Image (tube, rainbow, N blue to C red; front, side):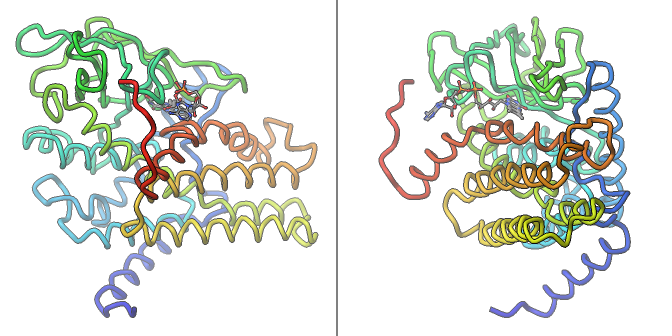
Length: 392
Ligand SMILES: Cc1cc2nc3c(=O)[nH]c(=O)nc-3n(C[C@H](O)[C@H](O)[C@H](O)COP(=O)(O)OP(=O)(O)OC[C@H]3O[C@@H](n4cnc5c(N)ncnc54)[C@H](O)[C@@H]3O)c2cc1C
């Protein structure tokens, strides 16, 4: 099918803008992995995370100024009201450059579908116009010590106190909680229903004293995520999303966007960086190194092809998430092979980003739902195989 003239003109306009404003992948200004923040101490983590947020906000403001941000969101909520294909064209172009909006991923990619499908007019007006300018960061308070894949088991309790709820409990593995202004929160509102029907979804203000964020030290020695303690935190009635007991319908919308967003990230496109790193080490001409670079390019091309057909593939989100996490793992392994023993030097500017990616790769197979859960979803929703028995 040939592209219509106006479609091609739009894509050309986007391409021209990006080539004039965005740093190239693999260049010294490349910040496509800025969101993969690791650090040796909790203070260093907070500092690096805050720097990553500043870099991301500056880029989001540029996108907004150029009219590319919130391209397909309704105009009354700060968007451009353009067709969805234009937003996809912009996102696709963005993956080719050394840029990232992933520090704001939850705000930009998960909150809008959630609010547009399940939120109230007031919630959309309060948050979307601020989010589109990069001025509001969100995190997700879903997982708990005893509820990860099975979120029907969340124990964090929201108690009605008139005018709103007080919420108490512990959340864990929360990415971005340190810099978040708001959280998408899943909490139990009905103690008498121990399963999915007893949970609801909220927009929680993270900047209240009843919310304690504690960075978690990982086995790599670094910090990426946090545990979050809610001690009678307050959510007003107006912050309930999707109705009382409707938490799982909202969650499904959010997870679908999350999986697609993870697979479509700019840091997933690392083949160009692999090539420039191989050139810098002087090993780019070696046949085995060339093979690794070509393999990485091929995986990216496959990912792009699946992404471009996403709208017509059932369970496209889980498929792209699986492809992406596998690609990230294989590319980081290849990078460490190419770097050789120097890859173990943490402060070396050439090896440090790859060491971070290598240590982050196993987590990608868990975050946003584990590989096993993605495969279950592909089997059930994509292939129509019998559903897993549900306990709740
Ligand atoms: C990098 C990263 C970022 C994250 N960010 C966030 C965040 O921002 N907010 C948040 O709330 N959470 C976050 N998480 C948590 C993540 O969502 C959970 O780790 C994940 O859902 C798995 O839950 P769990 O760790 O409790 O493992 P479990 O659910 O206990 O699973 C343990 C093992 O059992 C397998 N398993 C479980 N159920 C099934 C099943 N039905 N069929 C087959 N196998 C099964 C799993 O695949 C896994 O291998 C993040 C995790 C990572 C690694």
